[in-house]
Image 1 (cartoon, rainbow, N blue to C red):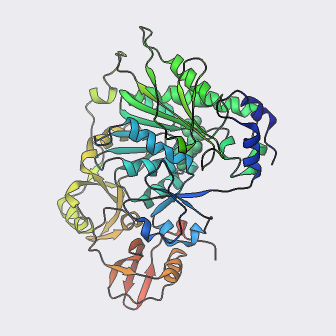
Image 2 (cartoon, rainbow, N blue to C red):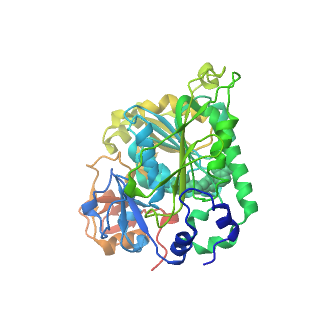
Image 3 (cartoon, protein in one colour):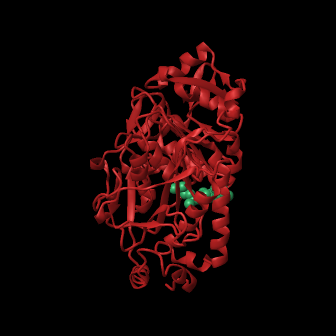
Length: 467
Ligand code: SAM
């Protein structure tokens, strides 16, 4: 593996960079696998794999001694854990250090697909909080929605918007996470093929894009709110230089800087390197493979100053917003309620023929957001009401809001995989009608039992294709 000389050159004076060690770790072929548990679904003792210690900066992250076939583990499909690179799990630590998570918060994960950071954020915020998980690229929103669905939480809204679209939500979010598209050098060790695509010109292009994204999104951060910016690039142009740009760019009319750089506490044994940017002394945190047990990563945090910017009254608050979503009738509510664990905590809306359950406290937010953003998914889709019965949706089966008294049928590994391949099932099930199939007590999806026949309702698009 030959690393781009121009990349090595650009890192010569960067704190923590040691060329020899850097090249050596990239040539070692050493691979690190880590997962993060879904606290709503899985306890570590129920995990099938052997783990190899905790990710030091994450309460739910674990290393595995080797990479198993996640595809052939039904718990993976049940959303019991997320396969995530260890360094990026540091987002948990920085949010916990700087944000009061006991409050109901509105959080935006702006560049969210495929959902690693969003599922992490969802696991650490309160049930009363809202996570808006956004992805601009249309073709990547499906995988984001799928991962959010498997995670099972109801307090997430998935959107498909350009950062510029958020301008109308002035001073709206308490926290914004920008895990920016970047030149990707931090992942060279994991994926040496990416080296061929690296160029200095692309680094420059990425840096410009990162600045544009930040400029577009900052108006929607509340005064006093926190911004977390990260990349998986080693290039200072995309890291410290972007911090300098951000600190420089945003001033009030009185020339007061609106962004305050945040400093994080580090444990020495984490191996994370703190840097300060050249011009404005903004703090950045570098993850060098070899120094940390993880891939290349960079993160920094900012607080938006509590200064008058003349426009703190948000457009959406001044307008009387007309509700446009259709609510369910009382009869329809009575049909869906028995499927939910705490039905009174939700309000129900109809979108085309689908019924969705949204946490009660998010009603106002959904009203606001639906006028401004393209909402791909909100809350949990319960299904469709046909002839006074609910035809349940897959989302409901794998959600954390489903009533535990809905009929369930536990299967072994072989039958779980048969189900996930959407093949015929030959199992004994004592119930008739809609039944949830579980593996190690975690829902995989619906089957419908009609006499001796069992219909497999696993979503076709998600079925396992390999043998
Ligand atoms: N946060 C994700 C996770 O942890 O799973 C990874 C995000 S990836 C580093 C960057 C994302 O930004 C990609 O999904 C990409 O499609 C999206 N993106 C690309 N161009 C963008 C733009 N101009 N504005 C916002 N997001 C963009």
